[in-house]
Image (tube, rainbow, N blue to C red; front, side, top):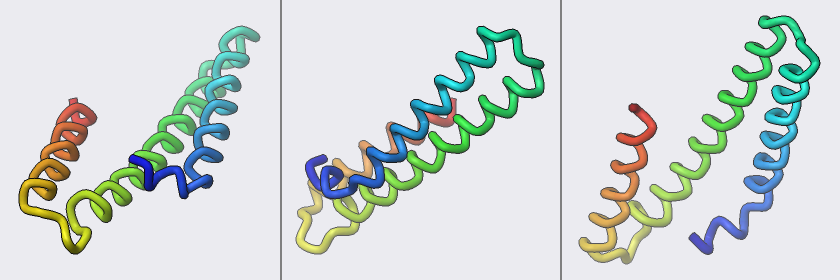
Length: 90
Protein backbone atom coordinates (compact mmCIF):
# COMPACT_ATOMS: atom_id res chain seq x y z
CA UNK A 1 0.00 0.00 0.00
CA UNK A 2 2.36 2.65 -1.16
CA UNK A 3 -0.36 5.30 -0.85
CA UNK A 4 -0.20 4.93 2.93
CA UNK A 5 3.36 6.24 2.91
CA UNK A 6 1.88 9.66 2.19
CA UNK A 7 0.13 9.51 5.58
CA UNK A 8 2.77 10.28 8.24
CA UNK A 9 -0.08 10.72 10.71
CA UNK A 10 -0.58 6.95 10.62
CA UNK A 11 3.03 6.36 11.64
CA UNK A 12 2.61 8.91 14.42
CA UNK A 13 -0.45 6.97 15.62
CA UNK A 14 1.58 3.76 15.73
CA UNK A 15 4.26 5.49 17.81
CA UNK A 16 1.60 6.67 20.28
CA UNK A 17 0.16 3.14 20.43
CA UNK A 18 3.66 1.79 21.16
CA UNK A 19 3.89 4.25 24.04
CA UNK A 20 0.54 3.14 25.35
CA UNK A 21 1.58 -0.53 25.19
CA UNK A 22 4.77 0.36 27.08
CA UNK A 23 2.58 2.01 29.73
CA UNK A 24 0.60 -1.22 30.09
CA UNK A 25 3.83 -3.17 30.50
CA UNK A 26 5.10 -0.69 33.08
CA UNK A 27 1.82 -0.87 35.01
CA UNK A 28 1.99 -4.65 35.09
CA UNK A 29 5.64 -4.68 36.13
CA UNK A 30 5.04 -2.15 38.91
CA UNK A 31 2.06 -4.05 40.30
CA UNK A 32 -0.35 -1.21 39.52
CA UNK A 33 -4.00 -1.65 40.52
CA UNK A 34 -6.14 -3.74 38.18
CA UNK A 35 -8.28 -0.71 37.31
CA UNK A 36 -5.21 1.20 36.11
CA UNK A 37 -4.09 -1.71 33.93
CA UNK A 38 -7.59 -2.14 32.52
CA UNK A 39 -7.86 1.56 31.65
CA UNK A 40 -4.52 1.46 29.87
CA UNK A 41 -5.47 -1.67 27.94
CA UNK A 42 -8.77 -0.06 26.94
CA UNK A 43 -6.87 2.98 25.70
CA UNK A 44 -4.63 0.76 23.55
CA UNK A 45 -7.64 -1.02 22.13
CA UNK A 46 -9.33 2.27 21.28
CA UNK A 47 -6.17 3.57 19.63
CA UNK A 48 -5.74 0.41 17.56
CA UNK A 49 -9.40 0.54 16.54
CA UNK A 50 -8.95 4.15 15.42
CA UNK A 51 -5.91 3.18 13.37
CA UNK A 52 -7.82 0.29 11.84
CA UNK A 53 -10.68 2.63 10.91
CA UNK A 54 -8.28 4.99 9.13
CA UNK A 55 -6.56 2.22 7.18
CA UNK A 56 -9.90 0.65 6.22
CA UNK A 57 -11.09 4.01 4.92
CA UNK A 58 -7.89 4.41 2.88
CA UNK A 59 -8.25 0.88 1.52
CA UNK A 60 -11.83 1.50 0.46
CA UNK A 61 -10.90 4.77 -1.20
CA UNK A 62 -7.88 3.39 -3.07
CA UNK A 63 -8.79 -0.25 -3.75
CA UNK A 64 -12.59 -0.34 -4.04
CA UNK A 65 -14.02 3.09 -4.84
CA UNK A 66 -11.22 4.66 -6.91
CA UNK A 67 -12.46 5.61 -10.37
CA UNK A 68 -10.73 3.67 -13.12
CA UNK A 69 -10.27 0.40 -11.25
CA UNK A 70 -11.18 -2.72 -13.16
CA UNK A 71 -13.90 -5.03 -11.88
CA UNK A 72 -11.17 -7.52 -10.96
CA UNK A 73 -9.24 -4.91 -8.96
CA UNK A 74 -12.42 -3.86 -7.13
CA UNK A 75 -13.27 -7.49 -6.37
CA UNK A 76 -9.75 -8.11 -5.01
CA UNK A 77 -9.91 -4.96 -2.88
CA UNK A 78 -13.30 -5.95 -1.50
CA UNK A 79 -12.16 -9.52 -0.83
CA UNK A 80 -9.07 -8.27 1.03
CA UNK A 81 -11.22 -6.02 3.19
CA UNK A 82 -13.76 -8.76 3.88
CA UNK A 83 -10.98 -11.11 5.01
CA UNK A 84 -9.69 -8.50 7.46
CA UNK A 85 -13.18 -7.78 8.82
CA UNK A 86 -13.88 -11.48 9.31
CA UNK A 87 -10.57 -11.97 11.09
CA UNK A 88 -11.14 -8.93 13.30
CA UNK A 89 -14.67 -10.05 14.20
CA UNK A 90 -13.46 -13.37 15.64
